[in-house]
Image (cartoon, rainbow, N blue to C red):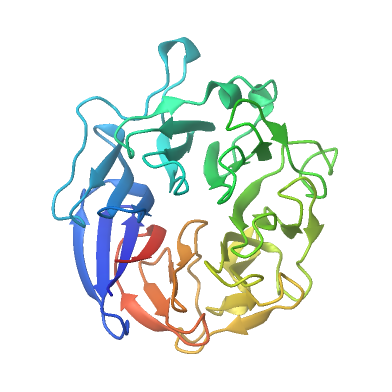
Length: 359
């Protein structure tokens, strides 16, 4: 068994592979040099694994490419695979998220974009169509732009019910569908938006990332713009789980792929000081769904440490694997759920996203 780590950066995609022990890594790349790779996915459903990369070129614009040979070659359609219909008057800024659907929907891949929209593919990510119900939602014109832009950055298909899907955006908050995307309801009750006159609005929150619990798919975890939350009812309502963390600001939120209640995050000081708390490189883990948190730093750089970790630059895989990359181009891996860490790569461009798979 080989572990594949797909690392999207501000100047291309890098692929790292390791044997079953994950004791050493071979790094190749850059694929798509001088493009910002904001989204990567590894579609490990039955059949040959497919890599998907959402990249943005300053010259050619945004696109999505696929590979069925682990990056040896890539297929990039001549026609833009993700594009807004002419009647919307919108232009694609970039693809922020690529997510294969569950095993009951072979070929379906979801894409979250900037401006905030959801697209659906039925051919494995080669072409996409706009989900008009979300684009035409009456709230859309009031969704704002976060510091990184206005984007759907979280797409969470329900693993057992293809009719249910959760998306999150900055800004706008969490939205839920129970009819395969035909209609959408906001799911932000309990999430605070301190920067708005009404701090508890129906929508408008700047949610940074949402993750779904592996053992209990009704349980979600959210890292907000100041706020860490858990939902036990599939995003209808939320409660704070920030107690025990050194800060409630950050970007990533990662759930264990098979162990219920285990989740990781990377706290930063505050929105106005986007540095690790105490200038220390530490991942925080909870093993009880946010009841308690513990810092993890064995093998990580000693202080002072200043780079941040972006919302999609941390992920978890099977066999105790946890991975993250920093804005200074360092990538770290753990083989024991974060108890200890070792370097995968250094001196890469700004790391934007990281995804892992066993192949």
